Amino acid sequence: MLNYIWLGLVLAAVLIGGWNGSLEAVAKEALDRASYAIMNLALPLAGVMTLWLGIMRLAERAGLVQLLARGLRPLLRLLFPEVPASHPAMGAMVMNMAANILGLGNAATPLGLRAMKLLDSLNPHPGTATNAMCTFLAINTASIQLIPMTAIGVLAASGAKSPTAIVGTAIISSFTAACCAMVAVKLFALLPIFRAPQAGSTRGTDEQKSAGAEESTEVSAEPAPLTALGSVVLALFLGFFVFLFIKMTFPQWFGGEAVQPSTFIRAITAVSVLAIPFLLSAIPLVAALRRVKVYEEFVEGAKEGFQTAVRIMPYLVAILVAIGMFRAAGGIEMMANLLAPVLGFIGFPTELLPMAFMRPLSGSGSLGVLTDIAKIHGADSLLARTAATIFGSTETTFYVLAVYFGSVAVKRTRHALAAGLVADVVGITVSVIVCRLMFS
Image (cartoon, rainbow, N blue to C red; front, side, top):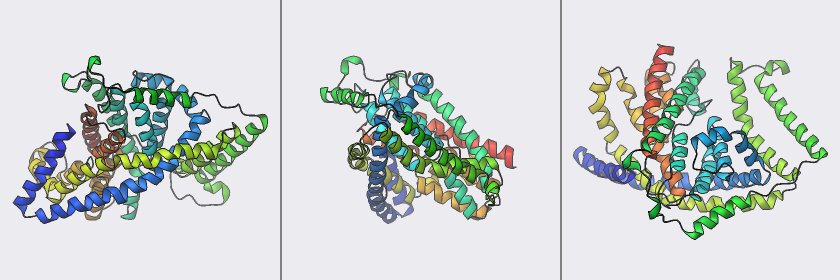
């Protein structure tokens, strides 16, 4: 499906640009997007991935990933029946989901790419997405976030009196979208058009199978148990972060002033602020207390980061260039104008059409649309809050698919894109309905 969409975007951009007299802008955007994909996305992502894949390695060696996966085994078995319960991919997917829920995008993407690599070790048809991969991508394209910090930041910067008012609407919209994405991805897998290759056409290689076996063996070794002293040290460390959480949630107890009026918002904000420092320090500490050689293991895991970033570069360039060309040619505006009468008739605000079209395609583009809506209509307006809810409850589907599938060289994405677009449509629709009910 991505083959046809990519070709359609490029051809439509050239045809529309030629009709509008904007071919020069289309050509410039193609070159700019290609440079942006490498310099502003892939290379910075390499550094972030190097860090988090090193931490992930320590978490595996310390037994934390396996412990987390065992705790959520019933849910994981329901969502991923094709993946063995003890496979390290289970833990990697759980950590990715947790990072997404907490809004830790810098951690979620590297952990997700790690999970995709582990899932690919079980793939009997390299280059073709498995059902487990499609389900995992659907979860990421319909990511549930407790606090949509970017959208809140835009509203606050635009002068909103209550920028956190969208927290509840974003949770409702993203949760509904995620549920619909799960139903869609399971149903689409049954359709003949998305059917996986038959067993007889298996193209799996011995190298891939041995890599998967090696991956499973690497993390299966049981680490040393915590000593009494280690347990005391860990308890004191955890107590320190509990203290910081309480201090940030109830600053009035310590002589400070509450920045956010709601205790719930302060608690969620505290979790978001403390999560990354906690993970970056707690995981190495636990690993060290369980006699893992933390520096050596971190470096070993970090080696994958740059290699993965290089692997996804062509996929990023391809998708971002096509989307940039289509946007520069005026394709988004043309689609919005064509559908405005129909959507206006059913009650969908025509002012939100650019956001609805842009959100699955481009994170920076949809952020610009949100900022523009807040500036024109007011940061506390129904339109601004609805646009912010859409931004906080849906994902840039095409970017997610390009990065995740590109990391394992999957070209046949099967029903992953269709399920992701279902999540986008549901998230956008529910955002409009919920915001109208709550803010009108």
